[in-house]
Length: 309
Image (cartoon, rainbow, N blue to C red):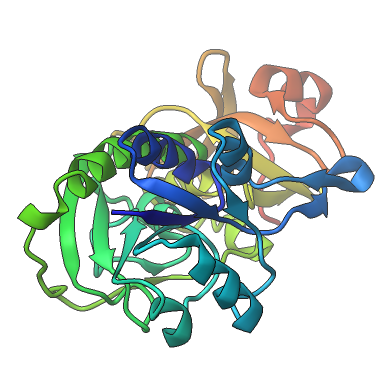
């Protein structure tokens, strides 16, 4: 197996390391460098950085059209393995390989698309999953080669779950691709659900929702787009929440959106429709994130305030 490993983000780096350790990776396909952040600096894809460390040849085309296909053909790879690469593979590109596989961080056909971890947290799933599938022309619709699941405890953030999945995927992919001939593919069973590219608006909190749903949205939205509400007519980001969404205190007294009190260990106690959440990190516009105590010290009128108005 001579793999062209197509990936971009940090979630795929441990898998690249593992497959290279097994002697399976011949080259890397990744996204172009971009400008961004403060000072409009050049940002290199994490997979490119790792490829350089491993002395693997890498290629960063803007598109996968004629020129890119011509170059990839010269690499002599017989297998394509994709993991959160960020571009769609067309039939002409796929025809360059005998075998085409995709690593997707969900239990397919659940959460096809580009934001499966966000959806898994936001929808209060009790388990996450990883699927290794054949690549088909319709996104994430190919037959399953192997899949695995792992428990979720209702405390995961998008950031922490990505880090966990990165490590689990590496071990799983290493096991599967080192013995690929022993697996029998199967069709995806069930009705597909989908995940889409996130927008800033996806982080908006509706305090008339259940506490568990708000708790999950805050965790699913960190580090981006960050959950937010309004306080004193300005945007207020809710960056972190204490405890598990599966064990919240019941609220039978306070109006949804009311900031009830400050708990020095757990954060700001805020009423949702049916329960309380404890927000322990907040951020005002153009300011840095603050722990709840520091935020209250500078905004004492938040106790008793109604958020979202």
